Amino acid sequence: MKLPNIESARSDDRVVIVGGGQAGAECAVTLRMLGFAGPITILAEESTHPYSRPPLSKGYLLGDVASADLHIRPPATYDDQRVDVRLETRVTGIDRATQTVRTEGPDGVHDVSYDWLVLATGGRARLLPDATVHAAPNVHTLRRLADIDEMRSQFTPGARLVVLGGGYVGLEVAAVARKSGLDVTVIEAAPRVLARVTVPVVSEFYERVHKQHGVDIRTSSSVDSVEVGADGRAMAVKLTDGVTLSADVVVVGIGMEANDELAHEAGLAVDGGVVVDEFCRTTDLRILAIGDCTKHPCAQNGGLRRVESVPNALEQAKVAAATLTGDARPHDAVPWFWSDQYDVKLQAVGLCPSHDEIVVRGCIDEGRSFSLFYLKDGTVRAANVVSNPRDFMFAKKMVATQVRVDPARLSDPAVPLKELLAVSGRERK
Image 1 (cartoon, rainbow, N blue to C red):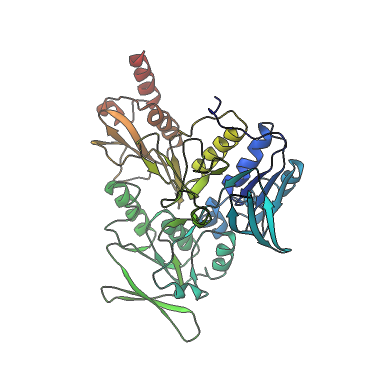
Image 2 (cartoon, rainbow, N blue to C red; image 1 turned 180 degrees about the horizontal axis):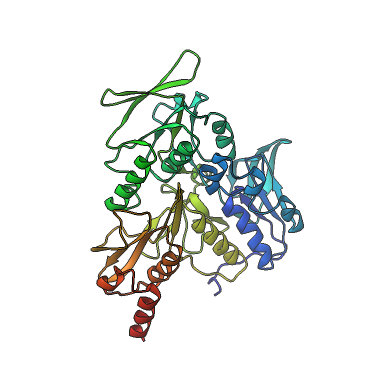
């Protein structure tokens, strides 16, 4: 569909993408796939070509994945596609009047002109209130390849690791650390792990799995301070209840903040992320934004939402490329996520802030595979699937179409989900 009264990119227009992550790389390549012929430039702060981040806290930290294997596409691909990737280049400002961005890179300070600007600035790890603690060489966050490179050498058998935060990243790091022989304690301020993303029964399952692997999980626990020794290294984590935990390594996994400062300083709408419409357009129609840095309309539940996930970044990248090439389609994909911990894979689809029924398929109290569905008014709105790829494949379809189901049949593993989808489809007809 054509955007009303909105000019799309001409064949010789210059597209500049700020950010060398998954979203920025996908947008550039998709533009070429859709036939865009004009100059494309990616301005990337890091020293390596765009790479995949999910393996950082899993296979790469464990040492099973090499850095070269993380590349989203081989570096030569960008040359083949005539995409100018400028590494170690930081964008310090946007001048909307002149349609230029100010950059600082290896060859100095420059202004780069654009006809269309795409912000794919991603996010950064949230820091502790006492940010000076992060200067300690054994206190780590997980966002970039360099973060993991610094951390890996300290993951030695017998080392005492304290993980601050019981979300996806914190638990993934804990799992890798236990496989590497570290003594691991996870500190979570909420009453349960994964409290922000799932319901208590799933949290209880993951706490049980980690405890079975020897992880000390302390929920409803808050950090008072991280004690730093005379050598500048963190030596202990002190909790507000007075307990002090000795530490050789500290990993801070307490969430992420959107990199939206450039947009804010340029006068674009920002609200805990760069505000965009369903076509990834900001309040300046010559500037789009995609990926973790955006606050976008939630097609499933209404309102605006920021989603931190690779599938969302890829989808928005494709939407932005389609918008630029004049074949716009709204961003309405149902978000989904995954997390690998030990031999357990959690796959989640949909966002369900409110539900009136939870249906468990399989046994959640023992074993390591089950599916959990969130229902609202009898329809499937979201699902958490543990170590069952087939169930997840159908769960995605059920959430996308908001299938109406019989809870009793949904809970019965003997009833194929494919059959429930087919029944719902016939009823709709």
